[in-house]
Image (cartoon, rainbow, N blue to C red; front, top):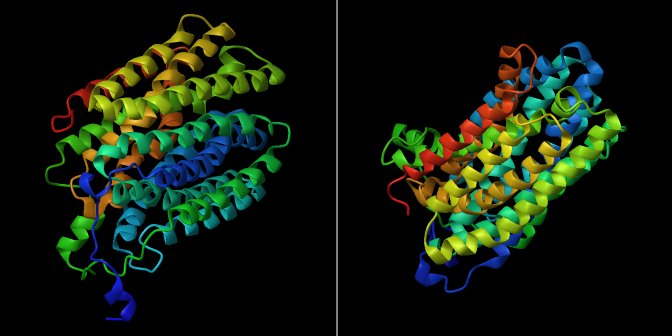
Length: 424
């Protein structure tokens, strides 16, 4: 053992309440900025620039191509979340377990968006988008695990609120920025790549993660493989209720967001200028309402010592919001959707992350298990277009049924969260 390793404190995989009297605000800032800088560019491309690029390459079959890309990316993201999360848990370096991965993911994500911008075939789009998913998920799961590693349970609502603040701005601000490049798609994709490049380094610089050399190393055995690379098998009922509850709620909103451009053109009947205006208006409404709720919901959740009730309330608001455009195809219904669903998603982003941290079966495998839970975030962004495409196809090209079906999905997700037993 080196002198460096001998001088390091004994490794702990989580921090108890008594060891952290004050909330570690810098962890919230780091993870919030990291979330903003990976999610904003991702959704700016996925929700706005990707559909626009597909329309340029294959306008006659654009919905099917978007669904194909989403299907392939979902498979890759699923594997990447689990494998990279597990490798992060096992990483031993002087920079810690998470930092090497989030920096690698940022660099690779930037490079792959540049490649994605250059390709001009459907095959090239699918392949480059899938490789991009690998690097993107090298940021996501390890970044979330920093909260589990370094934040005591009593502060997780507050820190999750700060994380959610960045997440919400990325969630909706990315689309606002993306919409500004609808007349210059290539430039927009490059800008998104450069923003992604900043995510890992900025988060790592603020956190300054301690060395993980003192963490016990694990030999490769079957039990180690099962623990670090397989879905949890024991004491995981609440874990899976949280996973699928999150998946249903997120899919409800991502289905509409992914097809927002087509909804505005083919259902609301707006021209290109109207589409650009309403993408910005809707995203602004979603962002403002979500920001307001994300700032307040986490600390309130800590104070009332409840995670499930705020998350169910969020699901109910999302269900009401996404149902609104079914009333009429007048543009105002999309604005009401933005305002009401935004309130729900703000609460959800802030409190659901704290809920997730409390249903983890084993803190030693935080990144792997958070990576699996994060499938409900990244996976629903991919699953949403598949669900929307299936609904539109089954309805003979009509977009109407997206809204009531997505409303039902949000309610189902909320009920699943209420079924969690070991978290209040």
